[in-house]
Structures are given as structure tokens and as C-alpha cells.
Length: 320
Image 1: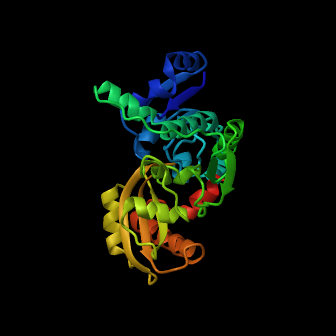
Image 2: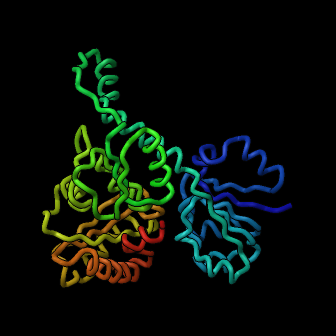
């Protein structure tokens, strides 16, 4: 019987599998689970998965060439996520390992949530419910309907396309734009840019109605309150294996690029395995020079940390 190792932290197994799926898996294979409530280091993973033919990998479990070399019995690496950027697919093929990934089946659920959030923003439903639960008077306000409003979607991948169909069904006008421009007349702005989503989606929290700006960068600047309108920014994202403190220390040691006036390091929500971001802020042409600056800095930062770092523009490109 095939032996399978599941790398998910023990407290995530119920969320990702559930008893029924776990029982079904055990009916066709001998199954080992990660005993820890945390992700395993590569050495721990190699020891735990030794002798297994298949590895069902948590969304952020990396798979460099050294992993496949250390697990000669492995024939399948099954990633429970869409992103396989941290998997060395070429190395897996060289070692005779099949790599699979999940399909983007979350487009419907995310798009439905966005529609619900737009209705809430337009009608103040959460505000009224909160007032009721606290015994406070609810102040009436004029709501806005979705029909006839214009929805601006930045990026047009799986989520963007599905959301566009829903918007048209509601009778909304639809505007699809690039990563860096959105018309200021749009009433509802939605970002569906994959790896960058968790940062620009903060747009929704700016005020009771979404504030709109000439560019996405301007909106992020206004929200974060740290960068002036004249500053350009190039962003680098670092793999989760490097702690924020280590990234900060490495950034302090690296030479600041000539075009950059300051470097900021901060934690971000998990972006396909990246949990720390580095902003390179200065005077340069963001669409052209910014890409080169970010890629060059990512290379130097990777070497300093021994951990992958990526230019944000490349993460966006990989998503599409």
C-alpha cells in the first residue's frame, strides 16, 4: 500500500481535510501526519516523510531540489494550493517526481464576498447591526444601489472575470484596468491581483465608501500615510522562511541603491508564502526603473538571507 505524508500543521488538518476525507485517504494509503502544530523545517520534513511515495504538502511547504534528493522513494508532490512558486518543478522532474497543484476554485466564494462587501458599504448594514447590538440608535442614511454604479477591477484573472460576470448580472457598469491605473469616477474599486491582494485590499478600509485615487500606488500611499505623492516605490517580498527581524537586519547591511532614498521593512499577510515585504522608496520611474531596482535588490537580499526574495512585479506576472 502507498505511504503518504501530510505536511499540514496538526491544527490545520481538520480545516483542510475533515474526518471524512481523512478516512477516505486512509482507506487507500498508509497515512502519516505532521505531529506538530507548526510547519516543519526541511530537515524535519525529510525525517518525517522518509520512505513515503507521496507528500501532500501544506500551501507554504517549500520543495527545493534538496528535498527531492533526500526523499528518493517520493513519486508525487501534491500541493494543496494553486501556487507552486516555492516548488522546484524542474528538479522534481529530474528526480522522477510528479508535482500537482490545486485548481483556482475559490473565484466564486471570493467574488460573492466582494459583492456582499459592496452592498454592506453602500447600505451600512454592518453599521446598523452594530448599533442594534449595542443598544444605540441607528442613524438613517441614504443607501446606494449597485445597479447603475461602476465597478472598477484591477487585474482580470480568475477572480476578476468571475466578479465581472456577477457585476453585469446586477446591472453594474464594468471597468477593467491595469495594475496601476483606475479612473477616479469609479464608485466601487476592487483589487483582484493575486499575490498583491492582501495589501491593496486595504483600500476597502479607508473610509465608509472606498476612496479612489488616480493610481493604486497613490491610494496605498494615502492609506499608509508614509510616502509622499512624488515618491516612487519598488517592492520586494521575502519567503516566509525568513523572519521579519532577519530581513530587517539584512536590509540594514545591504547597500541602498543609488535611486533609493530609504528602505522600509514590514510584515504582510501571507502572500503565497511571503510574509515580509521591503519597500524601496525614492525618485525613479516606477514602471521601468522600479522593476530593475526591485529585481536587483531581491537578488542581493536572497543571497544575504539564504532565502528566496522576489520583486513584486514578478509575483504579479506569475499569477497571470
